[in-house]
Amino acid sequence: MTLALVKMGPVAMPEALLTVAEMGRADAAAIAGGTPGAVLMEAAGRAVAVAVARRWQPCPVVVLCGPGNNGGDGYVAARWLARAGWPVTVARFGDPARLAGDAAHHARLWSGPVRAMAPDVVDGAGLVVDAIFGAGLSRPVDGVAAATLARAAAAGTPVVAIDVPSGLDGDTGRVRGHAVAAALTVTFFRRKPGHLLQPGRGLCGPTLVADIGIPPAVLDTIAPATFANAPGLWRAARRLRGADDHKYRFGHAVVVGGGRLTGAARLAAHAAARAGAGLVTVAAPVAALAGYAAQPAALLLAADAEIPALLEDPRRNAWLLGPGGGAGPALRTLAATVLAAGRATVLDADALTAFADRPADLFRAVRGPTILTPHDGEFARLFAVQGDRLARARAAAAESGAVVVLKGADTVIAAPDGRAAINGNAPPWLATAGTGDVLAGICVGLLAQGMPAFEAAAMAVWLHGAAGGACGPGLIADDLPAAIPAVLGGLG
Image 1 (cartoon, rainbow, N blue to C red):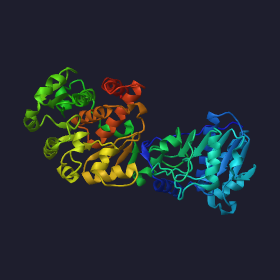
Image 2 (image 1 turned 30 degrees about the vertical axis):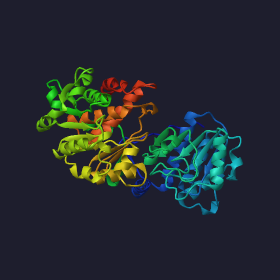
Image 3 (image 1 turned 60 degrees about the vertical axis):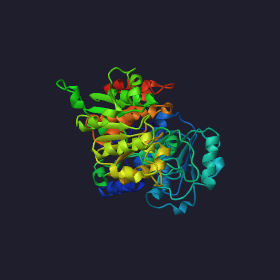
Image 4 (image 1 turned 90 degrees about the vertical axis):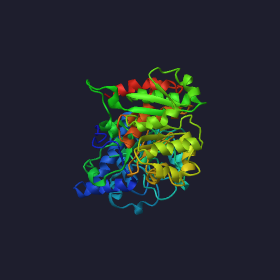
């Protein structure tokens, strides 16, 4: 028997990420709308079987079935694979009498071999399906479940995870007890934050989203506030040039540079121009201006003594402070002055460190659209909040009144109103000196064009990742600005 294709990926709000609780509400809404839970489970398990059949040749499969709905999905997957001619064994975890509801129903429909879960059940398997625990795991994975998964991983047997790899918290991406990396994860309706937050992203491997019949309209009642960072999240806010446009309609960004480490501000200013700002001025000490004039020629220059006059001109509508600025009282005072003027502002690097011993002063100064771009160390110096990255970024945004870009392999962009986006396109070779300055420059370039702060920050992070991907391994920060136009062109 050949497994028929199933539709993947509902199209409405594809960027939405659902917490475990929100996914429960989506299931409940679908059931209340007339789709029985058993039908949803049938669709979920069948989608897993289809995904397996698309990617692997028939081989001995062991399906590890847990005591809840995740195990129920596993029983369905086992049945569909067996019907297609795959040799399948189910290994059950715990007392089968404890199965209830839809999971018990589908377990009864499985007529193939069943073994109690033990590490040796995976010996000789060509593929293991992990259906032990789903994203809503309430306790650490240990004991026989952990040992069985570890044995499969040690043997190099590919593991296909249903929903998430067992042991992964779907809300935070953290591991509870033990988890092994999946060769493929199949989840349903929408991804969860844990699919994108590290270490979850690395453990999930490629993640496939299957449509199991939950109406996309349920998202209207759930009103998700967490998103995967992708063009659909900010495309409508992007400024596009028309035939009659001119540079002054796309804003004037000012990058405040230091007198010694000039490279950081130059990178940022170049990136702001490449991101589409109509004009970009670098304001720096007079003695350093010759260094800033080296390249690119499109940048305007001003002495730092002219900053008060620049700030009085409303056309200089977006400001970046911090790259190479020197984390001292003078920079702190200047940042507070720019913020108090209500200008759209990006604070990065030294401008954040300048407030490390008085973060409340920074938060009180925020007036207009503001983006803070800390890495973990800078974040810890400004904020005392605890929790996973998503929770910490949200709390910091609420406390500061600014959009917070918590940088890392799984950068989180959080707004004071509770919206948050998790970025997933940044390649590892972006971890090199100066790339953060480029990101800050893209942010101020988009702010200068009038984009709202959250959308500007999210677009900047995505552009940064896409440009890094286009450059490839071995990139240096200087490569990134020149890669931005092609990425923008690909957006249409």
